[in-house]
Amino acid sequence: MQDVTVVDHPLVQHKLTLMREKNTSTASFRQLLREIALLLTYEVTRDLQLTNTRIETPLAPMDSPILEGKKPVFASILRAGNGLLEGMLDLVPSARVAHVGIYRDPETLEPIEYYFKAPDDLADRLVIVVDPMLATANSASAAIEKLKERGARDIRFVCLLAAPEGIERFQRAQPGIPIYTGAIDEYLNDHGYIVPGLGDAGDRLYGTK
Ligand code: PRP
Ligand code: URA
Image (cartoon, rainbow, N blue to C red):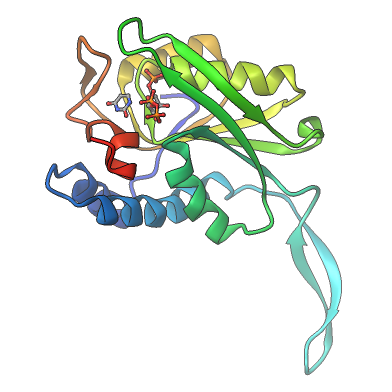
């Protein structure tokens, strides 16, 4: 599938299995998502540009690589995006953060936006949008539209699980934006849930059901 990277690292697959299991506790679910976020971030940042800087080690001067350009922005789709965000910030602590508050209406599955806060200079930064679930893709697409309105141009999307229907709809709505996911599941059910999936990511992350 073009523009879709499945991060099939054994540790991602192992941890994802533990997350899917319905009896996994809230604390474990949260910890596992944070750990998987490190591995997804490793993959989504793999091609970041480097530049050399002059430093001195205790033994000798050298030209050594550092990341080029402005720090990336991690744009978390609330609530569940924050579960991934925590792990991503563990790996890239200097990243900037955008918060996009969106939930989907349980009947219509349409995205309802309730909050937006992002750095002013999105146009100059790589923007990595994060949400564990890509189901209908309505939430991801609405978040990306909003970020584009505010100037974002260089955008990637990271999730833990995607439905094939969601990938197709995402690519029609947001052509050219690469997707990084831990797995592609079988299908979306009539209520817009990913099957076999892991249930409601926000509820499992925060223990609200
Ligand atoms: C979940 C999930 C995504 C969205 C995915 O959020 O975290 O944001 O559903 O579904 P979609 O691709 O069909 O839009 P939810 O609406 O449950 O909100 P919450 O994170 O605040 O619980
Ligand atoms: N949102 C979730 O949290 N889980 C799904 O399976 C679909 C949307």
